[in-house]
Length: 288
Image 1 (tube, helix red, strand yellow):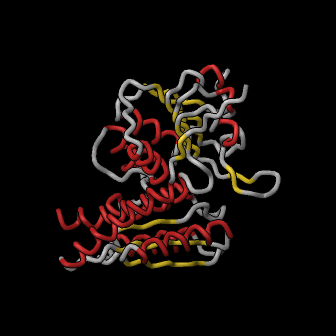
Image 2 (tube, helix red, strand yellow; image 1 turned 135 degrees about the horizontal axis):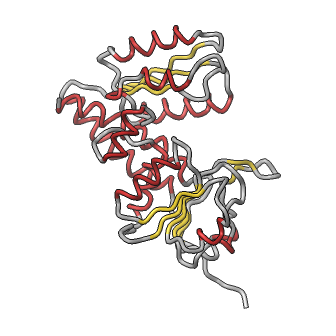
Image 3 (tube, helix red, strand yellow; image 1 turned 180 degrees about the horizontal axis):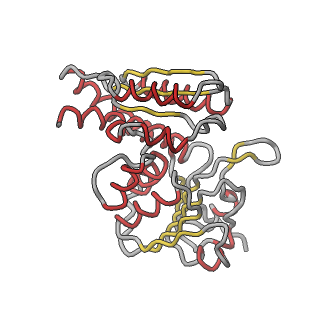
């Protein structure tokens, strides 16, 4: 007997559109007070994937009625030149958010560059001060990808209180902040990673699974409890070269209650939350 069940799809494109409309509305309100929210995007080198990402970020800003500056530099740019550029952006009143696209060329220390960005303009949420604020529950900037995942859970009216959430992945960009955000919403959180013994035994207990390791088919249908919510942060290519996530979508959607697709899931939400953070940076300036 074959199951006819399929999970409800959490549509990242649709949710992103709704949130961006709200950003545009708030940007108009700020402009009426004489402030245009501004984002500076800094790209060093010629990484093709990075070029696509920064183009989309700038385009998103412009469409939302915000001011965006794209600064491109050759891969030969020195670390001290980049730090000096960030320093001047920190004091530029027309810029509310600064984003340095990673990865950076090998001769530049990414941690040093991230720490050079003013925490008040750290719209990527990668600064140690932002991570600390999230850790202790103060207001800072949340990293865009896990923040987008939280918005997706919110969009389906899902209460995390008392639920068991399993995060697969422990990066500073997704895994760790994701776990903290889920914890803030009263979930019981387990973080799994490459050294986790018997991943399947843990994921089978999960009400919510966030897969964020960048490895295809890390989560398959036999690892998922019926009715659970599955959020796929992965961006991989399958054998045919098509974009896919960390989750075996076709298999898992027959077991899960909700699932995010790739593409069209978490991806559009990441850039949207960057716009939200930039807008909030400008709003905070008024409040200050």
